[in-house]
Length: 262
Image 1 (cartoon, helix red, strand yellow):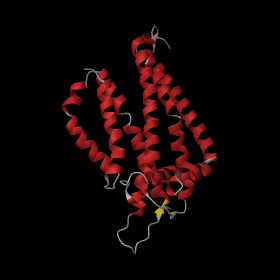
Image 2: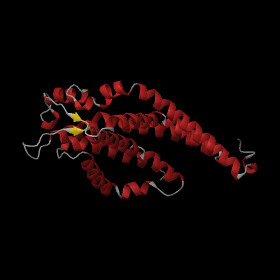
Image 3: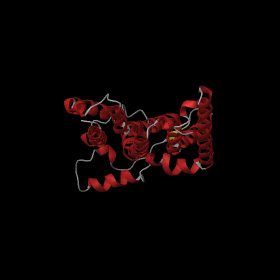
Image 4: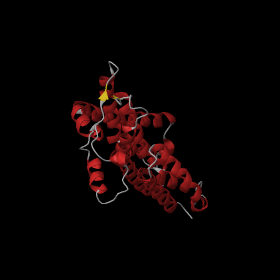
């Protein structure tokens, strides 16, 4: 479909193109999900459940770092093991399926975005196509960077704090499989979406809604709000964990300020 015949297309032609794109997206997601479904046992043991054990690389690194820097919080150090239990009969099977689908969506995210771009491409000018191409590239890059930070830093520190917190010595901590997966997916995807802030700011700037003066005027307010968001994401009260989340968020704010128009 080209720009020259764009005006000749009817509503039903556009609807047919949309149907084809949705079909291609579903096909890619289903194929990747089925592939992941076959290896989900190994994925769970090596990756998803890795933060529940002491040999997770972040915990080992923090133990080594604590020998040089005495400000590492105590809950990050020492032996660690989370006992994960299943209390619902069908949970393991349902989580096997749902996790395969979620990870399939994550891995097919670039394909999904590209297919959406193909649908709107005929309505764009040539210079807009070039800008959108870069936006898609950096949008994917930021999304996966956020997921990585969520998996490597935010979720393990949150898990370690909450799993080791005791209201009473008479209460034994055992984490249900459903609770573990809900926290895992929520924190990882939340960080992936938060990292799209520069892209969202750029898009709002292109349509004239957002300008750089906004970031200059509300920088102090943003610092307070980002600190509150970081405190919400990481319930521990120590400065180290808070800064681990706050600093990337504030860096995203500054990057967003750089990409919008003056």
